[in-house]
Amino acid sequence: MKIYTLIFILLISSVGFSQKKNWKENTVSTFLIGVHYAPTFALGDLGDRYGFLNHLGGSISYKTSGNWVFGVDGSFIFGNNTKMTGLFDHLVDSHGNISDANGDVGIVLANPRGLSFNLHAGKVIPVAKSNPNSGIFIRINAGYLQHRLNVETRDHVIPSLELKYRKGYDRFTTGLATEQFIGYLYMGNSEFVNFYAGGFIQEGFTRNRRNLNYDQPDVPVDKSLRLDIMVGIKVGWMIPAYSRKSKSYYYD
Image (cartoon, rainbow, N blue to C red; front, side, top):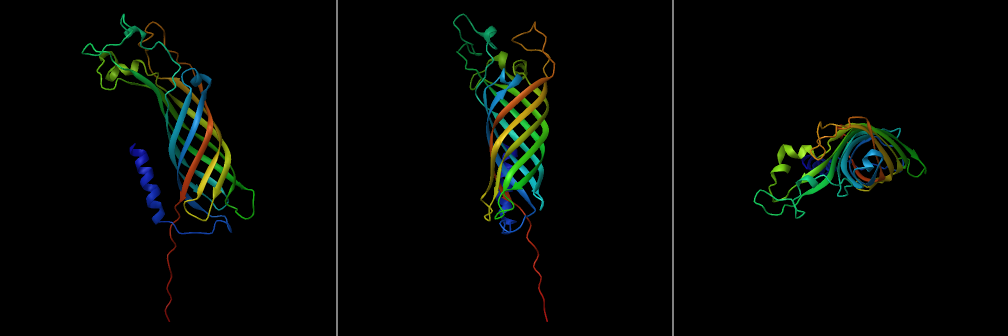
């Protein structure tokens, strides 16, 4: 939340440093501060664990006068579609419940969470002379991916699922990742009408980082290389942040 609050502040403050330019006459170089959202589906090894996932994040990029785009971006990954079953079966009593420290019925939630950080490089290919800063947008990313199962007991205290014990169920996984995006980027004369949308695919080359799964204590943790794939549509909104030019004064 601190990261996204900072991004929001940067977005708002960037308006104060903006100076309107005519995007429809010339290609313009500028910093771009943006936010994005992407609904995705998990495939590959990740698809064995999870289903639909959301990506919500921000980016800081620099667009050159030659329509090249370079920058960094990050996403928070979340959802509520978990395909893994039987994780807590050994904690269930004869009545089919998991009891908390007071003997009451406990509620356990387990949902996917993750993070992604990347460097990106892309190219805008204009399709209309009337707006040379807009066009087909191709971008590639390379960076870091992590994901895990977030275990929550809400207002209940279940000793077997508190603090460090949650690590025995979370399937914490990390590794390198790549991403390819193709879509359309629109840059308007208004600082607030700049957006892009398109399809993307992300490949994570990851490994399990835990040494023991508490629900499978007799089964060695698979440490082999995984291929975690996410496919979806990404939409983003950006604000240009080019600095004001200093004014010159002439006196006779």
